[in-house]
Amino acid sequence: MEHKTGLEDAYVMKDNKRLRMGYTTGSCAAAAAKAAASMLLCGSSIEETALMTPKGILLHLLIEDIKIKTDDNNTPIQVSCAVRKDGGDDPDVTDQALVYATVTRQDEGITIDGGEGVGRVTKPGLARAVGEAAINPVPLQMITQEVQDICREYGYHAGLKVVISIPRGRELADKTFNPRLGIEGGISVLGTSGIVIPMSEDALIASIRLEMQTYAARGEKYLLVTPGNYGERFASQMKELDHSTQMKCSNYVGETIDMAVELGFKGVLFIAHIGKFIKVSGGIMNTHSHSADCRAELMAAACIRAGGDADTAHKVLDTFTTEEALDVLEKSGAQLVCKTMEQVCLRVEFYLKNRCKGRIQIGAVLFSQVRGKLGETSEVPSLINYLNNE
Image (cartoon, rainbow, N blue to C red; front, side, top):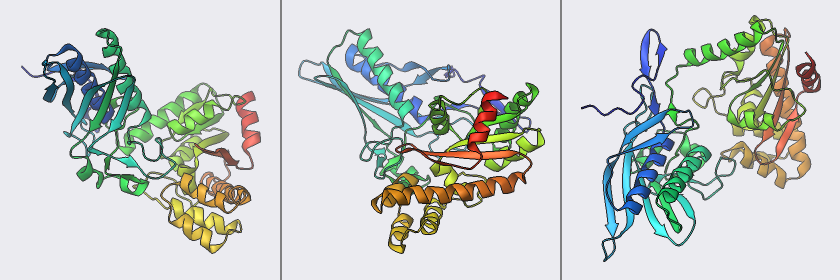
């Protein structure tokens, strides 16, 4: 009998084709950790485990390659097992890779780390600190929650150490942007919803358009737009801002502007991480790294425009992330960071206005995860006023 994961009826339509959904490396890691912890504490093997994803879909995942290490009394002291990644019909280099969790007893606390094939962060500015395993915040939270639940279920009050490993990770990392981002030794454990939703560019842009049409139908005239989760979180901290028309545009800055103009909106305010919108300062309107990635070059150009010297600009060119580039600028003086961001904002405003041809009011607030707000374009105060009062 064929195993059912819970995704049998989960799909999206593209060009009259059903595209299967899958589950993330984060879901695999959490399920493997849950199963390993359960086997460690109950002392017997299990073949399948259930996992509730952040998206609200309950998965039933098979457990593979179980290894149980016992002490002289035949009490389990370490359990290792794996869950096989299924990316559905989404093109994904990690599809069918085995994601392992090894769980070991320890005196107290739950610690989570990366093992073979899970990358290590070597550059600042990412979701994890330098030196930490590249296990993103949501998967980390999922793993922690599942292991804590198992401890409560078995009345276990000591500690557990969880190590996530992906044996093919080092090989797969060469097919990702991890080496360029300063993540070395393997891939990242990713996922914000636990579910992989196959999406072509056309389908994603269509979904952005649909949300925008909903606001237009409500009679809204101004939009608050963030590229992704980082922007959404930062915008949520701006208490002075009405968030009722907030939406995401992913990497499609240009298409979002075009649609806003077409649908008759009066203005768009972007709240964006510098890592995304530094590209817009060079006229790049699709900010995905597959389309263009010249963040260091554009930061260096802005540094020169701001009066920075050639040595500082050269150091900026050697950085992997915009957060790291900001560190370089700061070492040359806090004023250089400020002046460089002023230049970036001027160029961002130029290209945003060039794209909309002056037919809507447009602006952007740029921020850093480390430093907070970095700057804004000239029409931001006016846009905030309209968003709050229209």
